[in-house]
Length: 107
Image (cartoon, rainbow, N blue to C red):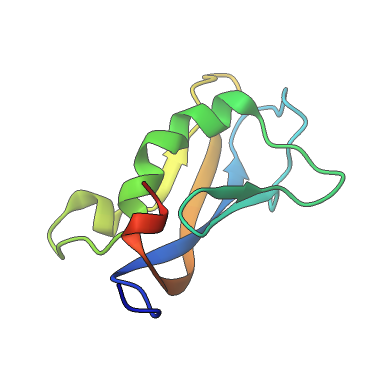
């Protein structure tokens, strides 16, 4: 296995892009978490991220961390919505960096 890794993966930032209803979870535009090194989720000190908003975006993050075909809908879409219909919290997933990793270190 080479020291520089056998796969490339993106680090991600998931941030609150807008709130179209009323914020019942106490989050605000700009609140975010980072997903780095495949599985390291960090939230800034003193902040929180709603577990229901997290649950709605979580299934898509592994795919967003990898290269996707140009025609793949997930390569084109970066917005996800919290399931609370009264809140309508919209999150944006952005790639913040790319790193090489050893797949053997992740399994």
